[in-house]
Image (cartoon, rainbow, N blue to C red; front, side, top):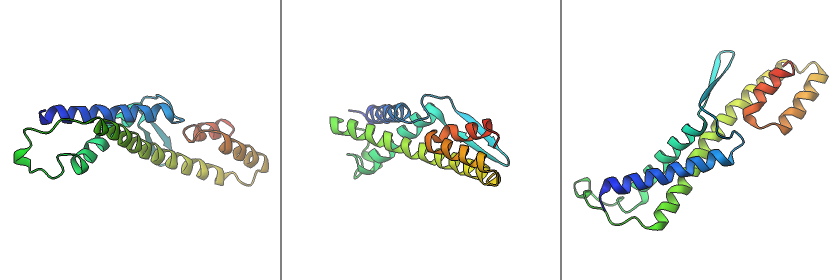
Length: 151
């Protein structure tokens, strides 16, 4: 099997992992978008970002731990066959890499939502409504929902 065939197989398996993460996350299959809040801008990478990060994560993992890890660059023209566990491992690494990206974006969104909430904490009714909202809403929707209730 040629190196480019193995490369492509691992990248596709990682992309599948990123796609699975997009399906499993609360954010769903959204296109990349920006959330502007004051001086900070948060990029929500959406399904395309998940697929890209999943592909890159699985490729890095394959180069570090796969059959080419102990091979010199000069002898990479021919690689042994891709075994099924490598495909499964690449999908798993793709999910994990994309999950990391989703978690980082959610963390930034929750930080912005917390900052908005802290500005209006003196109004107990708004604070209670915001507390209920933060308990139930997915992180990607917290900023928009806080804005909709006047915070």
